[in-house]
Image (tube, rainbow, N blue to C red; front, top):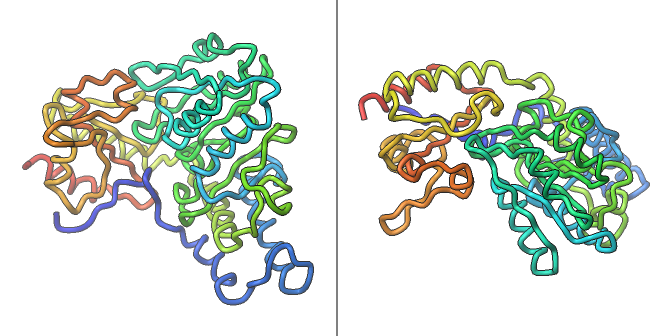
Length: 371
C-alpha cells in the first residue's frame, strides 16, 4: 500500500477544525473555574453553557437536559445505573438487546450482581430488534429499556421511535446509545421519543474524553458522581471546559453533515466494487437499507478478516472476529445475528468519514483484486 488510508471512522474520528479553534482560548487565556463568580470564572462558565446550547441544538432538547460526561461509556453507565438506583422502589427489571456495546451490556451484568433482572432480546439476521419483542418482555417491575440507536459494527439502525411508543404507553424510561448516529443521521430526542441518550465526542469529530448524557426533564436518575452540585447536581466535579467547548463546536459543525450523502454514495460504490471482484464470496452484514450511511461490514467468505487486513498494513479498518491459538471467534454481534462462522470469520468493517475519497477506495479495491 503506497499510503495510509483511514477507514475506521466508527472507532474514532479526527478532531474537526472548528473544535480545535474553540479550544485555543482555553489553553492559554481562560483558566478560571466555571463555579467561580469573579472575572476569571465567568468566561469559563459562559463557554460551558454555550457548548451546552450547541449540543442541545443538535439533539433537539433543552440545554438544561444536557449533562457533560467523560465519554460514551460513562454516559451509558450513568443512564443504566442511575435509573436502576433511583427506581429500586418501582422495580428491578431492565430490557436490552444482544447487540449492544459492552458499555451497555457490562453495566447490566454488574447490576445483576446487585439483584437486577435483565432480559436480553434477540435480533434478526440484519441485527434489528423487533419492537413487539420489547413489548412482550416488559413486566410490572420493568424500570428501564436500553436499545442502541445504531450498531457500531454492522451499522443497523434500530426502530427506536417504535420502541419509544411502547415505552411511553407503559411509562418506562427508554435509553439509547447514540454514539454512532449523532452527526451522521438525525438524532432528535423528540423524534426518537427517548428519555436518555448517550453521545461520545470522539465519534463526532471532537476529542476523546468528552461525551454527553441527555436526560429528559422529570426522569428519575441517581447522580453518577456524588459531590458538589455541578451539572445541576447530576455529575459532581469541576467541568472540563476545554473538551466541553470542543464538543459544542463539533456538534454545531455536524449539523451540515447530517445524512452524509457523499459517504453513503462512496460506501455503495465500494460495495459494488467488492461484489464485482468477489461475487458471492463476499456477503453483507447488517440491514441493506436501515444502516448508517458510512458503514459497510462485509464477510470475505472462507478467509479470516484479520489476515485480509494484514495484507494491507496501510489500511486502517476493523475486523468482526478474533483469532486465538489458531481458532477464530465471532464477535457477539455477528453471533447474535446468526452469521455462519465460515462467513463471519472473514468479517471486515469499513467505516467512512467526511474526508474519505473514491481514490482511496479505488486503491483498496485494486489491492484486494490482486491479493
